[in-house]
Image (tube, rainbow, N blue to C red; front, side):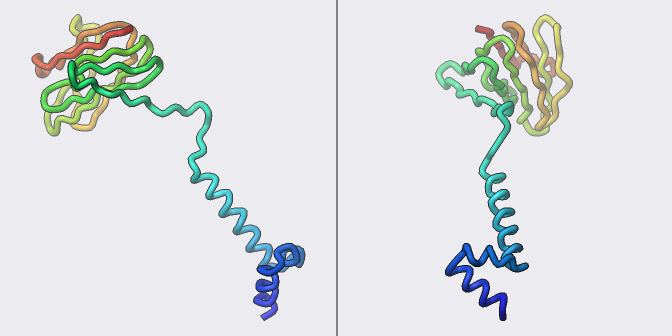
Length: 151
């Protein structure tokens, strides 16, 4: 009963409530601090080093995508095509190829044979740091072709 009276009095006068230093008031104060910290954590604080990928916006007229320097772009493999087929990036950008073509395996190979990705099953990805303009194709399905142009 004393705790209830103290609580009601605390609602009316919070300073008196927390000055009494009852077990209940200390637990309430601790829980308020926990709630505040938890809310702050959920508010989306992130470190200054963490960067979100910059999504590219395809140009539907010529199937070309342009992205900003230092960014990350995605080339989807779907319906037996690289989408977008032509991509313009800056040197040092990362292009991630992702197979979204169901059960059909694909890979990505540079036309001169300088590099070849492993075979990509559905959902697999292959990151490529772009150092220069390149033409590529799927060596499993040679009709699938694409280009990356460095500005």
